[in-house]
Image (cartoon, rainbow, N blue to C red; front, side, top):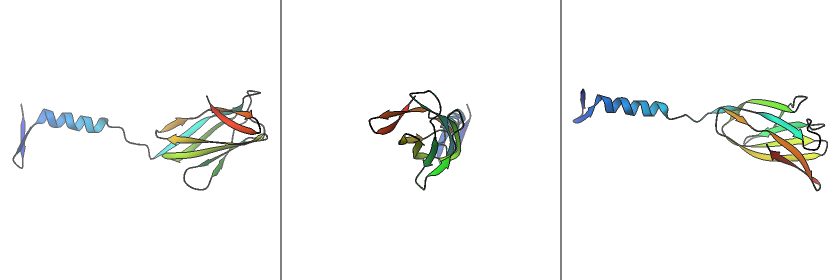
Length: 122
């Protein structure tokens, strides 16, 4: 068994290798991510009419397009808590999303509840 002596401390080479392996296995927190998903109208199953999307992650909301089928993909989203706001012809709804991995999926449907529109994750 190999021993490494440094500053009066003796350690086995196999122990040092194990610690090095453990350090490499600890996942790093993503500094930016991609947020993607689909938004649809609960009553029709289609993309919401007049739908648009804004994402705010600590700053001013940035508009992002919804594709014709309601899908979206936003790159370079910072880690942390963001607010997703969807505007449709029926109203506006927001939801808080946590960005904590390289790709975050968030799909939801819009529902009219009373005079309000809500986002229901799916």
